[in-house]
Image (cartoon, rainbow, N blue to C red; front, side, top):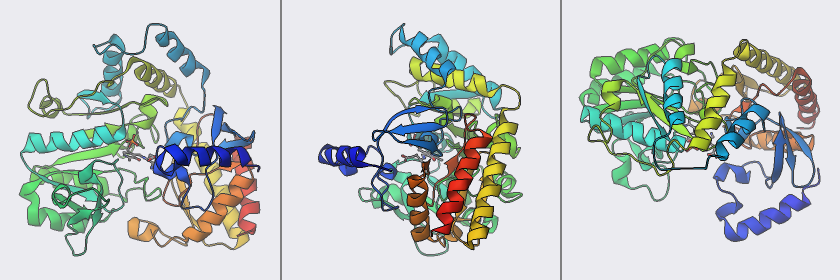
Length: 427
Ligand code: KE4
């Protein structure tokens, strides 16, 4: 692939944007290749500033489950656009959006729209602390919930894995109330609750981990968390920013039949525009300003354009056979990639839930972050470059999810598999 135009754009970008990108992962720094700049998308394809076509497996990191530039979504946005862009006052589409989310998720009785997943998780934790009057927060080692200080916390040493700042600029104070436990490890969680259960405001978890690569919950894990949080008076926050309307219309909580107290939603709910939300039990949500004492606000929260894109996307996802088709596509890709690795004699395993999956360069199994970190990231980087050379746009990190969309057909999945067969043979 010729990437000259992208390289020139990247040089310009680096002069005025840190790392040349508006979100770090886009810099492709872990895969030894400069980013490709995109001009437009159409269905499952995206097109580079260099004029090349790629089959997209990033899907804007999850939102584009319908594919790029879906006509019905664009038409809905255009129609709303004619009325104006933002009013700083309530609009009827925001009410409809909240009603649709409450209808889709039995655990969500009230919901508030925000502009990003970070805002949703940050506020859900503040709400849990305000509602319970407790300060401690439990999170999963390897879980990512956006960049609020108290969530940018790495696992320290020691059994209780007291949080230590996971980024420069995060103070000890901000990290001190966050405790980390390994994913899929109920005994570790039980120990924390035995020690400090009466201080725990909440646990926040990705019900299907997507930021250590895809790691599904083991049988009984989510139910176990539900029981422990209920027993100790702590809130169960499901961060469904990535899984919402991705793994099922009822989200992961519907798929695994576990009701959290609070849910964070993002990505797909915004249909590709900046929109996220959090919701849950009415008694908890009514602790939020202006009803209750927990403050949260946002100039563009519930922006009519973004809400219109989200509503149209959710409307289209209610069509029959949507998730059956996403499952079919995901299974086809998984089988093909595993066969490609096997024929190349390369150690690989795949974790998949529906249309989100990760191929780990290791024998596996991958059940938590420590397992995921055993992957051969050098080999992943070579694979990434070889696949991009063949017109396949992978997420540029071993620890991210690939996303298929309803715009991918069997043909494109087979093209991806063929590219993987060639790429793996070259590793
Ligand atoms: P945003 O603030 O990026 O909208 O959402 C943060 C977030 C919260 N929770 C989960 C489970 C998430 O996956 C995310 C963001 N996901 C990353 C990709 N793994 C977004 C890509 C990026 O950071 O550029």
